[in-house]
Length: 411
Image (cartoon, helix red, strand yellow):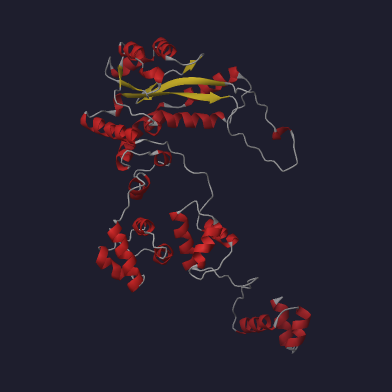
């Protein structure tokens, strides 16, 4: 089209004739002629110019990081206070462009104050007694179901075929298994054929003879079995019977699956199990056993040794859940996690400091290089300063303190 416009212009055609035959506007004709004369490349953008700029993207980024639950309409309303009018669809598109995805929340266990205190006691005990992970065997039970909770298929509304349905019984067929792992050690997989109580738990562990293999590797009573506080594990009769054969780790805190490396192994097994074609109870037992046996000792050793890192993460999180950081192999818990999320009543700034920054912002504006003299030297000039103004205008001290804190505005 551009070549045709320029050819007609070179042949002496009037602008009106070019406009009529090429069905373009005068501005397009002027741009084409100018570009050809100056040997430039034209980039024709269809539609009206975008109102988006880096400043708007930064503000949307700040808002979404601060509150992941906020919907697109609420973001529009916040931006409107700064005379920025964009649609919900634009906000949604910007969030995706910034790398946000609307995903389920990360599940972490709910911990009471007593749970947190006992998790902190574990840190002190491991440090004080100089517990070596090389002599710990981590154990636990896990349930494997014939039909997994997530069996997805591609479907269209109103269109059905055989793959659209899954037959389901009232009570899903499943098995309960037990295992334990350590450095250089993996027990046989124990499958419970009945309800697990104190008696079945004790008899199954002793009859399996797993501790005899552990004695050969570590020496008699030179290792400890780590188990959680499930009722069958901690009855007086269970502890008495098991302690006749081996030592039991004494201070494992309750509700602490994130600290036990074998929980990661159970998760990996269930992922592999989803890829298998299992039709009945017998196949389920066979496949679960094969998957357990397929894990090599090197991978298990790495998993067991991660307990050291888990203790460090637990210390950094002040005793609160480290599940999201274990799953992603983090070596450090973000500072704002333990200070803000772990303790909802904690504020990274004091109320006096919040009032002071609000007063200064209302007086001198968003001059962060000036504000640093009141709150210490900045590590770096943050790239999202302008976006903070949205929250400062709301005069919410907790929000202001937290927003400035997480982006490193103060030391």
